[in-house]
Image (cartoon, rainbow, N blue to C red; front, top):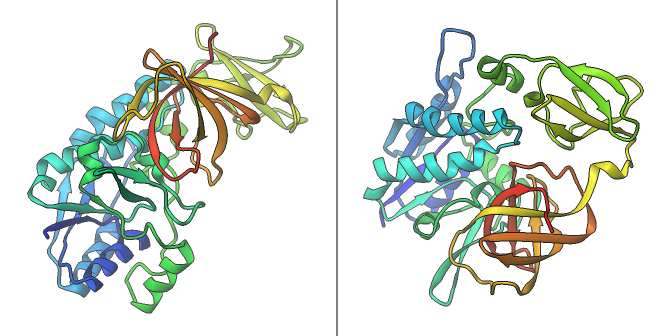
Length: 356
C-alpha cells in the first residue's frame, strides 16, 4: 500500500511515521509549506520544522518532499478568516486548513497518487455497515476530531491516524525510546500559519483599528473603549483592558462597533443553553430524520469536554439545546456534533444565535 505521510516537524507526526515503519510500511513524507514570508514583519518561518522533518526522513531512509501551498492557503483560508472577522464572526482557520489545504489541495496535487494519507492527528476511523466514519481518539484531551469535522467522505475514507489509539504520554515515550529528532520538542500552539505572529497584529494588517465603546450590558454604562470589534470574540475575558474584573464579552454590535461585557466569573450573561448551526456538513452521511429529536454530544470550541444536548435537524439547520450551561457561544465558530456516545463525529456547522 502506497502511503503519503504529512509531517510537520513536531513529535506527533514523527511518531506516526515511526509507527508506520514499524508496521512494515515505507511512506513518502511531505511537509506542507503554508506560512508566507512578507516584507512587513508578518512572516512565518519553517526552517526548524523542515530541519526536524528532514532528520526524521533520514533516520528511516524515507523520501521527503516540501509541497508549497502558500498561495492556495492565503487565497482560501486566510481570505475566509479575514472576511469572517470583518463581519463580526469568530472563524476557525485550522478547520478550513484541514478541509481545503491538507486534504484538499494536497490531495489533488500529490495525494491522489497514494492509497492512503497518514497524519499525526489524534483521531481514528471506523467502518460501520461498509461506510467509513470519523471517530474520536483514545485520548480525550488531545482528540482533534473537531478540527477535522469539515472534511468529506472521500477524504476520511483515505485517511490513516496512527495515533488514534494512544495517549499523549505514550506518544512522548515512543518518541524518546525511538530517539526521534523531535522527541523533546514542545507542542505547537495557536493558528497553524501564524507561527510566532500575534493574532491581533495579523488582523490589524487587514482591518486596521476603529475605536468603539465597551458597554456593561446590565446597566448600559460605557466603561471603556476598544480598538475594533474584530479583535474580540464572545466569551473572551483577557485583553479587554478593564479594571475591577473579571469582565467577559457577551455580545457585539458590529454595525455600531460596540462591545457588550458583563462582570463576574459566574455572570449568567456569559452562558447560554441553545444555539443553531447553519450550512451543516455531514462527513459520511445524514443519520437523522427531519424534525425528530436526537440525543447527541457536541463541542463549540477545542476542548477535552463533550457536552450533552438534544438536536433537531430541520430544513438544513441544526438546533441544539442543552440542560448544561454553555459558556461563550461564539457565532462563526464551528459547532461539532457527535453521536450520543461521543464516538462518531457526524459533522459540523457554523454557530448562529438560536431562533424560535
